[in-house]
Amino acid sequence: MELTLLWAVLTAFGAAYLTLRLRQIDVPTRPLDRLIGAAVVGMFAGRLAAILQAGINPMLNPGQLILIRGGVDTLWASLGGFAALAWPLRHNLRALDNLAPAALAALGGWHAGCVWRSTCLGSVSELPWAWALPGSDLTRHPVEIYAAIGFASGAFLFAQLSLPPGMVTGLAVSWAALTRLLTEPMRPSVGGGPVAFYVVAALAGVALSAWSNQRSETRTASP
Image (tube, rainbow, N blue to C red; front, top):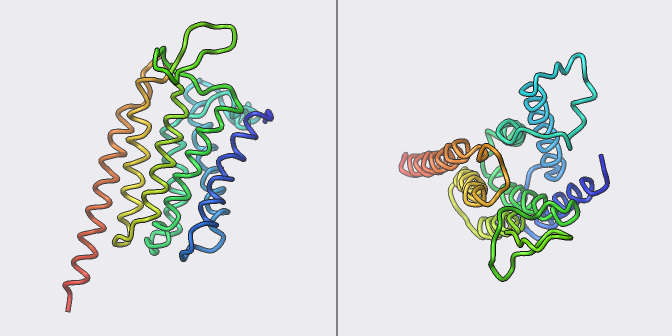
């Protein structure tokens, strides 16, 4: 792992750690370890999917699994990370809700880590805050900074909310998906990115929130 990527990872988990420290709430046992574990599972799932899509046999080339710089499939990384975080807490949705702001903060820190990696810029822009790559006069959107601000805003917002168990988690999933969806057009990509996945994830988050709210109302109405 090169140092710039390491600094980006440390920025992500520094943001998560700070969020957990600032919030005086009940969180699951070793919450930062849970987030780190989910991130590792997500990166492994995403990297495995990426090398399989590239036609590489991981059994014959196991070293390819640790070359994260070579590419990680966003869809499988997201699904793997979310499953690793949510499944152990499926019977404790309140605890999962309490972790949601820290998870968003970690995502914001990862995107802000573009500063270390020199990967902040996207499509061409003439906005006053756009900037250019060294040696270039062409200014571009700092799209990763936009995403970092979006995730950080979500972390702050959901840290203030007190909702029925499961609702904050659902809303955080939708917020994360919409943040990526809104910034996707400004990213330099050949295929346009997994837009459909972000749309489905946003709708799934809303559905989870609605189900959680209905579940809470049903329990409250029960004698």
